Length: 251
Image (tube, rainbow, N blue to C red):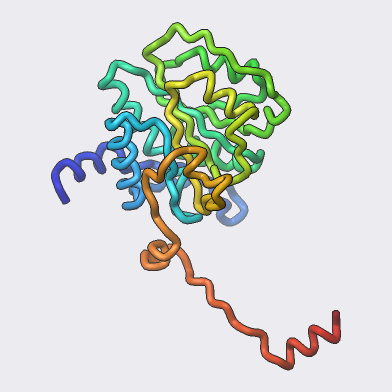
């Protein structure tokens, strides 16, 4: 409850969300005030601490359902101010690997009042890479649209005050650190910040998430979510013998 934390929460920890819901057959808009959950709060502080140390890449391991998209929303404002103090303009990209995730992220960011853009083609994405609107915005990119694009990405970057920040959603899913479009995109801007979000990181030695994106910046595990009352504990129950015999007969 320090003054610094309270002021940080007041400045970056609130989102006013426009929710559309069907009530008695009619679509009505409801405004809700959402407050940053503590794992989002401390993850944001941890990211800022690491950036101050010069670390540009890392993993946020927060269990599924813990609000990683909401965390990304809060990060856009906190990191925009962080880089403004360095006379840099922060530009955000939210990377997904499925169309439904793009639509979900787009609607969640938009509901919170963030200006959201998408890029359907390489040309669109490259044009956005080189421009800056001056507004707090985020570009949501479905990387599967560029899966076949192996061509090297070249950015003629004359704007040295631009700081690109990539937030990679579901970072555990088959990301290849070499040869793919996303890797080429990262290589084109060596100074970019890469924040990988996952609820279930890859742990196998050859493809471990931390080996691809760097060490864990912050963690919030399944057991903590259970203690907080956000996740129900999985209970394994054996099938009674009589049911097992019936199932065997059916099969």
